Image 1 (spheres, rainbow, N blue to C red):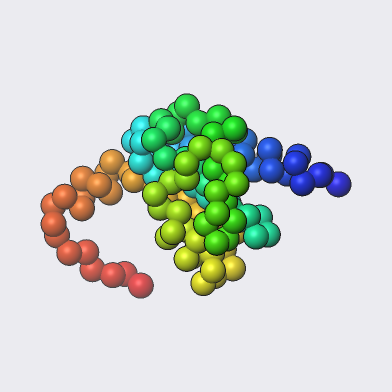
Image 2 (cartoon, rainbow, N blue to C red):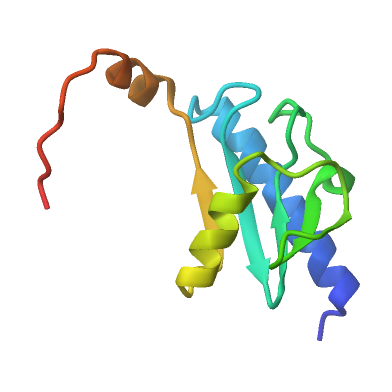
Amino acid sequence: MATIETRALLLKKEITEFMALSYERGLTSSLSGNISVRAEQVVFISPTKVPRYRIRPDDVSVVTMMGEHLEGKHPSSELPTHLAIYKATESSAIVHAHSRFATALSCLGNDLESRC
């Protein structure tokens, strides 16, 4: 069974890998978008002001569900939104992308019809 420290390191590595992948695939720019993972009462979230392709496991911010910073770099400015989603749902991970295509589409100012 993995120790708490081993699990934390694995989560940090996964966040760094998926942030780099989202950048490579054009889902984020170098400084936009973020990923977080909830593990019990702790949230691991990508840091602010670090290029998505350069995030290292030690950079990943770790905070409590109350937003108290425990370790890593300063958390994403989207932390309050992530915490609110975690408190309102049973979600265990959030990916917030800024695809250049979605961003370009939003600049057109056209309303989109819901297909749901």
